[in-house]
Structures are given as C-alpha cells and as structure tokens.
Amino acid sequence: MDVSDPRQCRAATERAAAGLGGLDILVNNAGIEEVRPSLDVDEALWDKILDTNLRGAFFCAQAAAASMQAGGRGGAILNICSLTSEVGIPTAAPYGSSKTGLLGMTRALSAEWAPLGIRVNAIAPGYFRTAMTEGFYADPKWRESMLGRIPLGRFGALEDLVGAAVFLVSDASAYITGQCLAVDGGFLASV
Image (cartoon, rainbow, N blue to C red; front, side):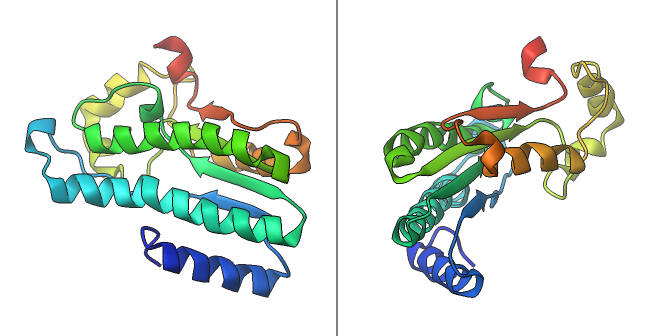
C-alpha cells in the first residue's frame, strides 16, 4: 500500500481490524532514504521521503487510533525513528528531517491519545544492515570507522530490535508513552 495516501491507510486498518477482531498494535515501519548532498536535493526527493516517512506514519497512526478508540480497548503505536532523530548526518537532510519530525509526532500523539488508552512510543535503531543501508556496508573504510564509534563493537542485527519492540507494544510497558528507545549499541551515549 502507499502509506502516504490516507485513504489506503484507513482501508488497510479496516481490513486488519476486521480480520483480527480489532486492532491493538500498529508498528509504523515504512521508510525510505536516498543519500544525496543537501545542495542537490530537489522537491521531488524531499516530498518522496517526507511523504513516506512522516506523512505516512501520521495517517497510519490516525487510522489505527480511530480503530483502537472505536474498539474501546486502547492500544499501542510504535514508530520506527532513527539515530537521525537525535543527531545530524551529512547527506541525509530529508531523511533526518522526516525522522526528527516522527519523534516530535510520537511525543505529541502520546500526550493527546493517552486519555484514550493509546500509548505511542518509538525505537531509534542504530546501524543495522538492511537493503536500504547496504551501500554503506559495501565500503570497508566506512564499516571500520563506524564500528569504532559503537561501544558494543558490532552492528545491530534485526533480532536486536525484537525485544525492544515487543516490550514497547506489550503490557510490560503499560506506564510508558512518548518515549524513544535507542537500540544502537551505545552509539548515542558516546557521541
């Protein structure tokens, strides 16, 4: 689906709620990036990244929250932010802007929707090898330099995100909302 289209967000939410007997959890994970010097960013690239990473997350969250409220059970929304929500990364201005905006949205929605029993939190993954980041990992100098900045001395494995995600959408975090948990091997703590 195209997450930047509010109608598709609502339709997908309705299908999921109908198929599951209600909706309790949303994980906003859709994201795109294109590394480009900021002086070379055009409107099309800016809009593409912000529409997917921020606009899409908002309208998916809005649709999910409406379903959760209608179901009367509340729920949990987990947004996937980034280290760029906290630190500037050269050649990632649109991406960093979208993820910083997503962090602000996480906090705003958590405050607004808490009375509805809907918690909104985020995870900020550190350096994980994915299809989107493969270009970085192909460069041995980048890998060596980056590993030297991660206190745990290794890149993240996708399995490292599972426990944090399950925790933040489960009842184990019933008194946590508006937070962003860095899952980054200590990167932000050492910057």
